[in-house]
Image (tube, rainbow, N blue to C red; front, side, top):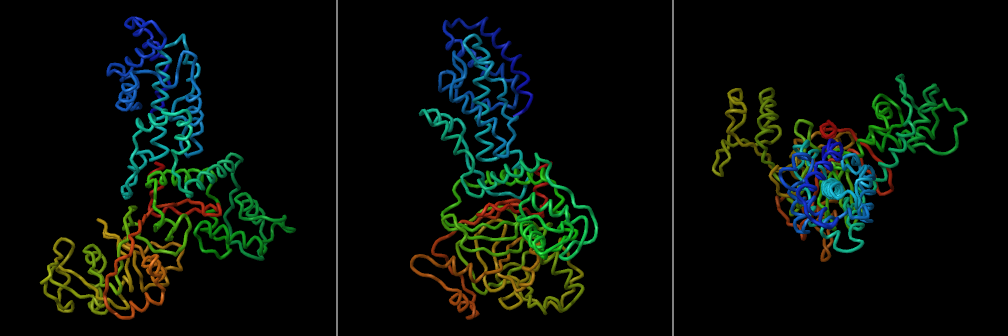
Amino acid sequence: MSRRVAGVVRLLAACLLAACSASAMADTVADRMAESLRYQLTSAARSWGGSAFDWTDLDAFYRQRQYRPVWCGPGGLDQRAHLLIAALRHADREGLDPGDYHVNGAETQCGRSRPAASAWVDILLTNSFFGYSRDVSTGRPQLRSTDPKWFIQAPAADPVKLLEAALSNPDGLARTLQNLPPPEPGYRRLRAALAHYRALAAQGGWPDLPPGPSLKVDVRDARVALLRQRLRLSGDLSGAAAPDPELFDAPLQAAVERFQQRYGLDADGVVGPLTRAALNVPAAARVEQIRLNMERWRWLPRDLGTRYVMVNMAGFDLKVVDHGQAVLTMPVIVGKPYRSTPAFSGRVSYLVFNPGWTVPRTIAVEDMLPKERLDPDYLSREGVEVFSGWSEDAERLDPAQMDWSRYDKDNFPFRFYQPPGPTNPLGRVKFMFPNRFGVYLHDTPSRGLFQRSVRTFSSGCIRVEKPLELAAYLLSDADRTWTVGEVQAQIDTGETRAVHLPQALPIYLVYWTAWADADGVVHFRDDIYGRDRRMQE
């Protein structure tokens, strides 16, 4: 909604009053308000409110009410109006801007002696309900459009039907307003974190840690006292005051490690450049980061499912949730920034033991072809088979006999295939949830990469640290429980085999750079794909 709407209230009310005085012959206040409502909802008057108003929804809503007002009567605003106004004025609790909903001054414009102005206030409040209900439940479309790689379908919203249902019984509006935000615990915990970090920011935040040599245990430095203050404010350091504030002692080292774990840094207890940079991000910036991630929660379905898999790309982790509890978690590797993993949802329906890898053309042309030019034995050493094309009867070729300098992205007809084996990038098992992006979960022989704090190494697919545990969980149901040993036995056969799950599970690939865990501990991560930055801009 445009902020200019509030500025035209008095002008519009005066125009409406003049119009109604000239044209309306109704005898009662209610009739005059109905005439005012009807007039305002005509195309001639719409230009005053412009695109800030949902004119189609407003017209549909009031027409089925015979243009009777909802919020504003002869005696002023009714109780439901006060309830709505209170919710709109506290929209900041949901990470929204109360100024977007234009309710200031509504009380003074409504009453028996001002039917035209009362009609305008009624329309204004209805329009504000429409906008707020959409924003807080399904997100703001203009923000969703800033992320071209977010493909999870937002829940549908019909504000007209929602308001009609809310008005159908005495306490319906109160329940509706309460139930508008996402119901997931992850959203509610972020809402609590928002209030906490807003309070920190309002109190001045925390001090910056000046540059200098790294701070670590047993070091004495004047900056250590500032570090203590900083970590106390964020809740990472507790307990009694240190006898020597400028000495980096063991309790302070443990506090630094807690901070580093919350921010996805190497938890070595040393305050080097990366840790200092994270410490110096202002509290106000963390408030905005929390708000952005609350917004993304609104882009998810209202019901994620009883059991589901969620991959957080920015957090480099996967969790399996069963009845609200995380029953399995593990680190993951995600797409490189220039091949970022998209955010989308699907259903994990089967897995493949000992998979082969048909190399995507992009990887073949951009990654493998340059390596083969530099090292003529690269493809053979990696066990990559080369075929003349993509048809079933394509001829297998000897890569050593090819003049690879003749080919580039514009004339590359070949198909590369890597059979199952110890060097296959997919490892020994892959997890399939068919999608248009060709993205799936899989094992990897490059186990050491899971020890890195930033894990953007793939070409878009998700590499999982515990593929056997994940396979055992997904294959189990009430009739049979798989063990990790049984999964390993399937792999040890060497046979490529697809196994369908007893029940397909929803999977969500999301992008959280801020979240609060089940204990309420708030975590932050770097904006690896620049998606926060685009939303802020």
